[in-house]
Image 1 (tube, one colour):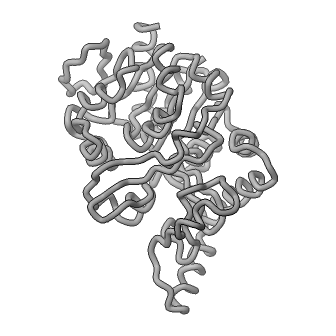
Image 2 (image 1 turned 90 degrees about the vertical axis):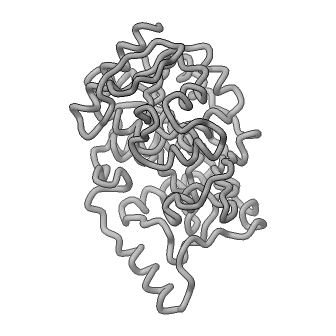
Image 3 (image 1 turned 45 degrees about the vertical axis):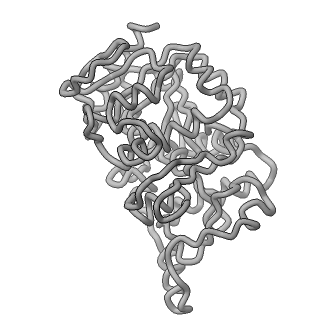
Length: 330
């Protein structure tokens, strides 16, 4: 049995080849939900859905977002209506009182659907409508995710990190904004001052997640701050990792990040944007998988390989290195 912690695109890319090494039937994926947003009344779970669509064989792997060859007629019409009505486009974060009123499935991450700032495909939208409707019927996010995983025929077990809402808010020189606004709309251009995981102090890990964390854990090459950070902010999560073998794959080659805003976010919260900084952020990690060209000297066992993942063969190579590291510390 093995558990992967997933957020962004790094870990899903690794999962693409992990089945060559780890039995999917004995693999659990715990996905970050701090990036979730309620957009036009529908709960969008980007990191859950990337794994969902990957496992279902429909993921758009050019973008690592959404469903391949999806249509966007609803999104197109939303923008046409906004333009015709003279409504301002861009993220329309709802006022404070609306963030906490009514349903509590998406506290502090609510956006208007007017000229939605995240492009949602039509089939993709059907997933969000189904998810939100089942939550409104009283089911938990864990149960709903399991139902959707069955619909997509996932071979691995997929769990959200919590059934409770956690909002990743980025404090920048242009103000405080939800991570999706920072990343999707602003393209990570504002200077990061700090990152807050609002709601993490009261959110709880589920029994299913607690059980998954008792197995050996793989932290994939995801963003340490906004992909893995929301999980680590949950009470009991770090403690569970300290009690089980953990292998982490660095998303850096020394001080060069493969993709995304990880470097800016790490610097913004006080970590060196490098493999050394990742090791500092992950004191619970028993071993690391680093790139062949990464000469960082760590105080823990290291397995080196080419960690760039551009396809199935690359992913399988990194997964074999992960397996080697797990054997060394288990």
